[in-house]
Amino acid sequence: MPVILNVTMLDGLFGVAVAARDDDHSSRRRGECFATVGYSRVVYLPASFHESQTPLMHELMRSYPLATLVTLDEGALAADHIPMQVLAAPAPFGMLRGHVARANPLWRRHPQDREALVVFQGPQAYVSPSFYPTKRLTGEVVPTWNYAVVHAHGKLSFIHDRQWLLALVESLTDVHEASRANPWKVADAPPDYIDKMLGAIVGFEFVISRMTGKWKVSQNRNGADRQGVVDGLRSTPDGNARAIADLVQRP
Image 1 (cartoon, rainbow, N blue to C red):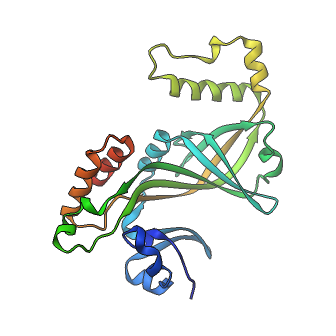
Image 2: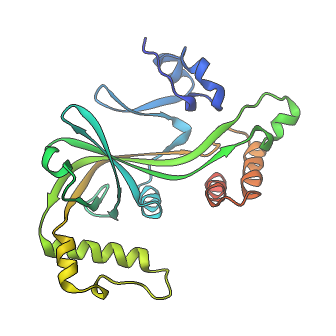
Image 3: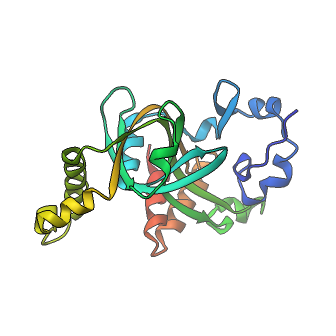
């Protein structure tokens, strides 16, 4: 039987010791599952934490656009951290766009027929046992961590066309400058300087072949404990914690 170590297999941070003894069959009996492709384990995913709605996953990806692109580089795993644009088309899962430095070996080494993984990390927050009314009733509670993430799988295609690159950086800039009183625009910089900068990057498109959403937001707690988590997280000044509280309260 496989031995799987993962702190999210149980409710708390102290789940590791027991999780190491769990096998595939006992996991299924508890209503837990693995998101798999063929025989490859993609992510440990209890059924109660599974988020399958594409619009909600896209919303998280747009709200937290700095993603981790994971590729295989000559037999070794490589990770690049890249702000990405999320497009709803093509169906059913959409497309990601971004760019890397031309000096980055990724675009030379990554075969365009090989799958890659992009991970979007949404809000996350520590959950204290003190948040749960169950603590006062039985004391049988432990800490845990709530979070929301999206794993997107697909294939990269690299783009060198200057007009495509210009349109991409203009679009990215307009999105991230939109909240400013006086938004900066690409056209504010000298054209020859922008042309030089475009020559220093390589664009990419990433058509998403499948997506997995994991929303670990106290779905496995009773109603009173869930409300305690909401109240506890909202009492902190941490914006991430308040964002998690919103997800816990979501129907």
